[in-house]
Length: 93
Image (cartoon, rainbow, N blue to C red; front, side, top):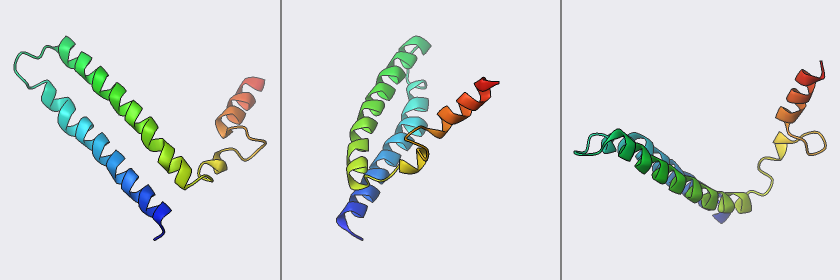
């Protein structure tokens, strides 16, 4: 395994661990804590998931740098996304 692949695997497992911990441990437990109302719990969740999104954006950088060709299959025709082609076909009549 070359160093680039090792970074991809490590970063992938860090990301997976964060998502699983927040989604299945932190989110349900905060509503079981004493004196945490629904409004406070949802506010905390909004902050936690915003922080997770920022960290995911940072994690995406090494993934993109290690595999610069990843994702190129999503744009087979002139750099346009497949979804854009489907929407254009559906709205064309």
